[in-house]
Length: 113
Image (cartoon, rainbow, N blue to C red; front, side, top):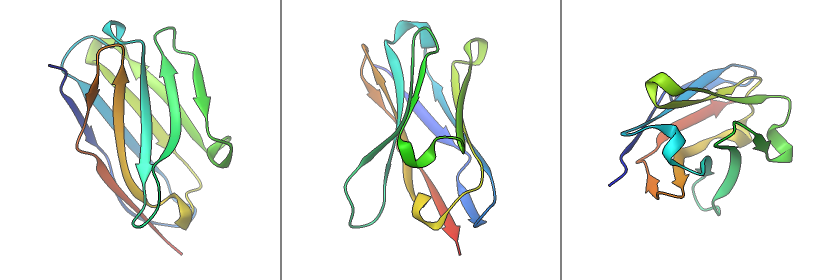
């Protein structure tokens, strides 16, 4: 069973930064990819960014140029660096693995205006 733990959320003012972490219980290379989602209260889930096994990344249009994915294979961790945060970035952020399915509990991000 894949276990994922997210961390790094918090409350920041607009324009601030946060770095989220998604740490897996096994090697990232066991997965086809890692995907970050977010869900704001009363809204549908949004795919924020993804990284595949070869470290190719994709971002939703609204975060391009502000969010950056990276990974540390030795730590089984994928990072989501979020800069120039906006209030509309607020929500519960959680990671999901594909290939071997897993999902974390999420970490809350709140951006105040």
